[in-house]
Amino acid sequence: MVSPSTKLYGLIGYPLGHSISFYIHNAAFRALSIDALYINIPIEPESFSKAILGIKYLPIYGLNVTIPHKERIIDFLDEISVISKLIGAVNTVYLEENKWKGENTDFGGFLETLKELKLDKDLPCLILGAGGAARAVVYAVIEYGFKEIYLTNRTYGRAERIAEEVKKNKNIEIKIIPWQERHKVDEKLILINTTSIGLDSKSTPWNGNFKSIAFVYDIIYNPKETPLLSLAKENNVPFKNGLDMLIYQACLSWNKWFGFIGPFEIMKREAEKLL
Image 1 (cartoon, rainbow, N blue to C red):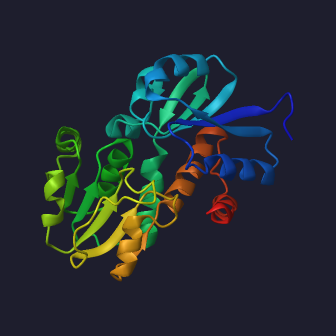
Image 2: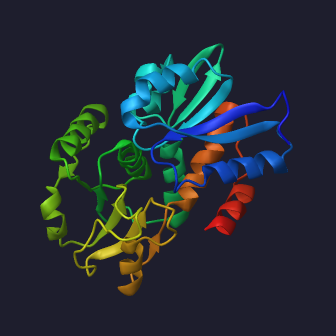
């Protein structure tokens, strides 16, 4: 039940049709009797600057940020966390002492799933994409302990920038592979997709052979099984979608909004009902 005292939270990005954040947060609010409402706020890229300035004057107490605004939002915040500065992307915004502050919970969310999967750190990983989510994934795989990291992106320069930043910040070399040559890596590896390719349920970022793939992780969660994951299944390669990463990052957002970690099991049950 919405009341005059209900606090507003929400998701900004574009498009938002695939997102289930609205459902999982509101289900958790109801279960814990929190007087809050989570709403979708689709903002087209060309309207972002005007829209975000307007939002700052509305009674909104926290936001999640998704594609394509995770990097642009930083310019409109008063402060961002150390990890957000390192990654160069923010996915959680919160109000504290009348300041709009930014955090990156994608990093912690992805890292938590890596720990649960117990993937072989001695295998190299190939990361597809170089957007805001990719930045969080890159730093998470470094934190997890992968010793060899490949990165590829349709725009070579974006991947190059991430590699340069990682070299500067962590003194770790990331090997850049041109997008058109991504299938040529023939050593046993873990494949991680951070691009939006597959959201349409038709396209896949990987048409190469799966003989050298030990594990496939697609951070897309809707559809539950992307074309990439279907190919992994057909080739008997173990795989995971991005649902648990989504839930973990949502739970970590609550820590900034309410001062405690959100209820993982409640959000997960709601998500599974939807998907």
